[in-house]
Image (cartoon, rainbow, N blue to C red; front, top):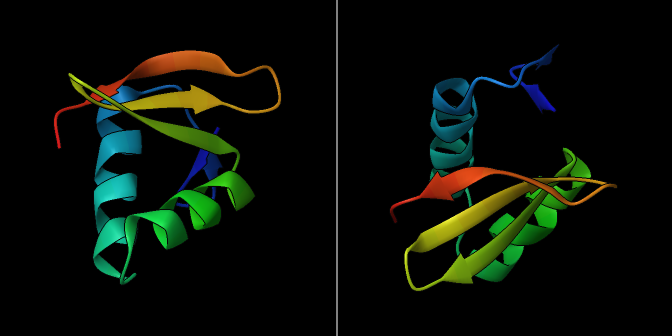
Amino acid sequence: MFAENKLTDDMAEIEAFLVRERAKVLSEAEWKFRMRGYGYNLRRTNGGVEVARLPQNTVLGTLAL
């Protein structure tokens, strides 16, 4: 979806955007809420944080956080 105001499917760009946005908030719940506004659904798994595109909920990849 959108990272840095441009449409992208590049997981490296998306990961950089998500990490920068995570640094701006106090809690993981707030981070997940903000990212839903950008069109990303974040879900905590055993392997890290799964990133999916909304509204289809298509999985883009997993962040090892």
